Image 1 (cartoon, each protein chain N blue to C red):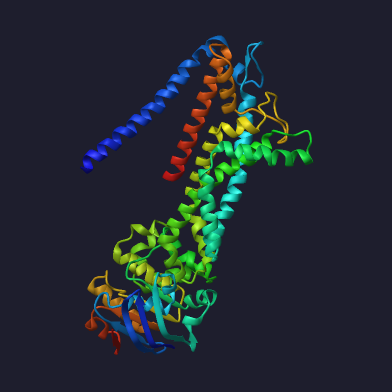
Image 2: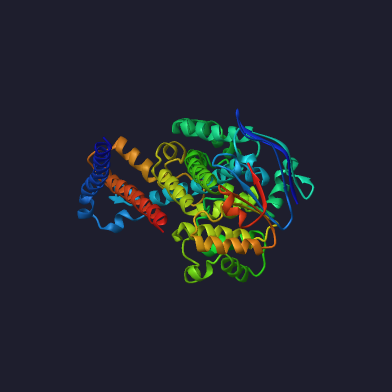
Length: 212
Length: 276
């Protein structure tokens, strides 16, 4: 599904990682663990090629997605590919709109049908629907940190991507919710890459663990 | 130190606000005499004839609005186009050229624009319309050149702020740069853009030099954009330069009250749009 071959990243003179080789299997969860600042989030930027918008970076190697080298793709093609490789950041990057619009805006752009039904389903999947069903049209910034994190996860699930890049998806959640979201991800049928600080956390989800 | 600085800022803000209010009250006081001698319909009529004691400023008010709104329309079209190109273009040289041109335009004195227009635009329009020399059209075109940098810098600032905050999120979700600009940036910046347009309008209404040099200053009511006309600001400048202590001189204080009042209204509109 996704093959990372001999990938090296540096910013200026600072090497982030070198000669990285990772094989991501289709419809399975793969975890990448490592200490803070080791380049886990940067790896996600390399995979969805948002690294191109960073300054003074150097990237070598290959990132093969269904046999296509993403590093050689044009920006127009990458825009189409990014719809299928959705990155969910650690900091909830909600848009300045209502809770509903945070989901519907993206759904409309990608011409998703039955938007309302799919939004409700996505919110239910992340255990958020019951908490916010009465205030879907209020400002999304009024949500707590944990709710915002689940909202952006719901937004990613709504697009039904082939690959989900999850950066510490349960960092702001309590133990019970973390467990529930973990189970949901395990049952979710798509390729998922999770990055985390702790091996023990991701061990519950998968045996495919890479250490950076 | 911060507290002292805050108090100093508060003092200067309060002082400036009080000064503006004082000027408004002073101008209102100085035109009180007019209301004692004439009824309000005299000032709001279309006739200005000092010998017949007619001090109607409606023609000037109309010309001010005609020139300002024409200039605003032209400036909006150009500013929006320039900013869209800067935002969407991948050509770094073009972006650099447009950004520097806007900055350069903001540094050119008004009188230079007016002189350049006298040498270029006026003869050009006269070629096609011999009866028209200095007119609403010429003043509007040149005034729009004055507004383009103001409006463009405000638009660019709004676009760049939104881009800095939300571009990665939107591109991460599979939006193209075009989608991001047309469906997100524009949708989320219209309130602030409206503020920028109104700010430019207040600048257009208050401009004197271009109207004075290029609008022709005729007192008759203009019936087309090729006609000569006089704005409130040029009227104030012309009466002030030629007259003193007459009813006509006092009438220009009423023009000043109208100008300042219109600026207050525009600022109030900007504030209420931003609060919403």
